[in-house]
Image 1 (cartoon, rainbow over the protein chains, first blue to last red):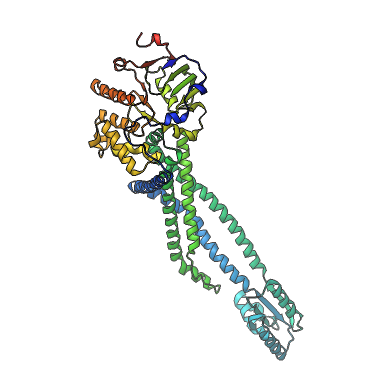
Image 2: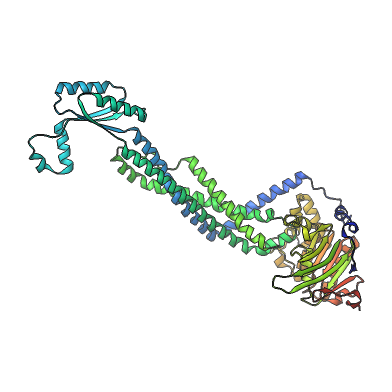
Length: 338
Length: 224
């Protein structure tokens, strides 16, 4: 040992290799090959996975709360997604059945009307139609408005005969327009109306909902990130001393991080599974009531459950969220310890 | 092995912990750092183990320039030194064997080599028969010896000890010192920080004396 001695450091110190020569010769030198390194690496993965699972089960009270929190945060966008998925499907089926209303000339004879109806029946572009005589139309109008007295006071029935017509499902919008023009050109047809505007409106509304849903999902994902990284930070602080010791005997950051990453992924997986189960149970409970409602629109929700790919996406997403939040939580601690 | 070149360390609060420290510990040497508490012993060890970085000056440990070492290389440096703490710092939820095996696990040894090395290290400190115990069940001296086994299991070229006999009685301290001497005899460089001058006196090793963050010239050290 020497003190207060200036010397050119680079030349004077032996090179690195010399320092790494084994200092004792008692045992045979150990060869660390890449394959043993990889095996040990896998082993640590396995050990971290197992250890984190054990930790999770040991603190089941806390971890189940965390998972429940994640599940609640996830199930809201998931329920929306399920609603959206099904309603988008339904809107499409509605769109396909655009409705056309033809008002016939008031002075058309019965023979002319029959000929026209026959003509429509033979047209391939028409899927189905309903014919309402002026009397039926009046009855319906009376029933729906409740203005019997006023209508009874009229000298004659002011309503024309009406044909409600559904174009074939395969028709495009342009084809439907073409059909409309063709029918309007018939002398017997006084006026034709194509009711597409409300469907367009519904479609626009659904797009707004879709966007809003995405926004809500992103905000909730951020919320989940904070909740999870906070609870993982708790686990990290509990093992602060251990992390310090492990780092001082030569662990790198990845080694320290690994068990916590597994913990995060378990939280994510548990939360995602709970959310999927919750939404499925909720929709199972709602399904009969929704179908009652939909029956009034001649619709039926066959499977309200989430399709498997969507579920897998949700699970994968929540596991990834867990991983990210664990990474954030450990980063903080790694920065603060040496 | 260790070279300090005009090292200063100032904590953010303002007080200077180390002031213009320059010294060299050669390979295979055994040296002591003494001084009253607050003299800067712990800071010096923290700088060597890269727990802190110097405010200015150069530190070389084992051919690595610590003052310029990127953070991700720090584990590499630590793997070639063994660190013994005053309060032993064992992991209480693992067995003695697993505690000692820790540095080998990180270095990527196979299970066979780990078992062989761990048993050899435990045998050296005389605790082979307690490998399955938990550190909780051991006495203070035994815990300290497990800490030493953990530090030497990787056959480090450099051994750093912070008050290794801090809470131990004289007999146990002497026992631990003789262990260190044994390691030194097979070529390990050892640096021990202690305020216990009685511990040093039997040995004719180099002594660095710190007073208020400065190294005293050898003539004014404990032997003066």
